[in-house]
Image (cartoon, rainbow, N blue to C red):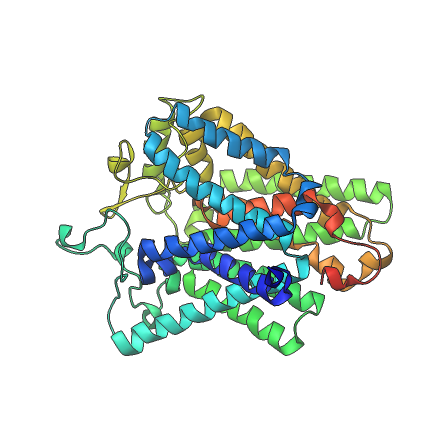
Length: 445
């Protein structure tokens, strides 16, 4: 089992795992759910072997309490679930995602993790553009998945809705592209992560200057090609976070630091009020109507369902199971059955009730708080003044900020990469000693 200690093997494991959770639909559309399941099982076995191999490392640093509490609540919900069979399936997916996140946090060092995330994002973004070019110049028509999603039968439709297509062949028409993940919003989020990771790699000088700028620019191009309003707002939020971190980092005294926090708080309050007062104008500037691409109809249906079981919810399910009530007829958009609420917080309320919202909220809040402390509140003296360390400490905060912004328009925070990245950052920031200040920075850069 010595191969488990090989840095190249661990790097390959991290790349494949991150690619699989970020581009799960691409894998499923290509090799079917059965092929995807087989890949997940292989990765899960490797994850267990790595955890056994590194048991001395993680047994001394237990899983953060909010992570354990959320997983425990989701698991216990099988006892009051309206659909226990679907809950068991959802729990299997959630626990496997949590296993992946925990393994990456414990068994993969920061430098390998950053490099692996960069490679996974490059593969998805480059593959997406090549895929869209092939659709445009080779197939010359919209392309359906080789294997459709569960419950989707193409012959049931007189005219196939655009949401069912893997690619709608819109690259040369100036409309949103979907890439290999088959979804413009998801591809936009991946491109946003690319901006974060490639930017950090460039600032940390772990990649060549020209290469770093080219990939950063390419991620920006993919953000433009997806034209997601949510990602536009997330980009604004991430720029604001970076500016806030810089402001606090440059505060040399307690007084200036306190003033910095007061200024940041004032700006947040002002922007929140302005966004509410000028909501229609903001949505119009982003190309959205007050229905938010029909999301309000979905939210209304989910809220109505949540109010029927407000305290503990209907039971955890992760992705909605389209073959069981109440999901089999809960929400449709353009004739396509929806598999999530397009809002993670409403989804948690519906599935785990008010208790779930509190527990999940504590998980997100504690992870964001530790990420902020790592990025802004820790003193930048000695070795931490190194640009590589200063850049790398931004990674958890920016990833969590992107996930939180997306959570109000999508429920991806509760599935696949959302669970993996949340658990990864929760565990990683909970083990701050992994950012070793003594000796060389080779362990983290």
